[in-house]
Image 1: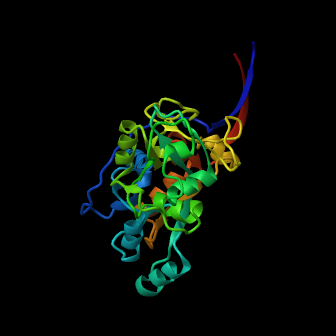
Image 2: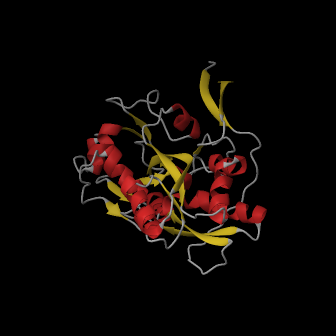
Image 3: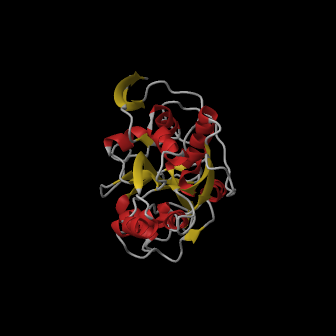
Length: 313
């Protein structure tokens, strides 16, 4: 029997070969090499952006320092650093404080849209879920896999996330649980890498992670994820089916069919046209946005197009 399957491919001009780097240690550097404090959620993206930027603009460069979002914002407000990456804009009161006390004007550049992915162990047969049931898991109202699937033998749902002060956890609290308290059964690990490794090793685990950590580097169109975990399909409907769920592919973020999307910002306060300014412009430019797409996120500033492709099998 011949079947037809339709899906959208998100493309951007001139997808290139990219390299990754990581440096989490703050260092004293010349003015043209500056530290950037980044929510650890975005380490896979910013490490690559920093390496490519430095290769193209040496001796200018940035030294990534990965932390949680609360620490990154605090560093900016204390003027200990003038370049950060977060999943939120500064509040008006924060901007006013910087202007009044430090005479610094905040510049915010939207660079990407990120999907909050829900991942489970590859052996877990339950890979579809509703938004309402996820909310109940996070709030402790659903605690066992058999409450989602009566035939499940996995037992207690072991929900894990990264640092309690990360942007991912704040998103779960504010946007998914609508400000309600999270269950005390949820387990905080240190990093997203820890979350990923825990889910890979634990059949009953459920992990909350930024999509950049599970992208498939071998897939130039970003139509698949890491083969080490299963990414749950999510729906706002009352019952999940293969036809009504969505996963955080770039095209799903583009179409707004995936329910858990957040913005990613570069925020800088340097008053002159120094490295902070040029790095923000680089990430928002064509080459930097190609890196964003290659990392599995949706570019925010470059024109993308949706192409419909029909497959027969």
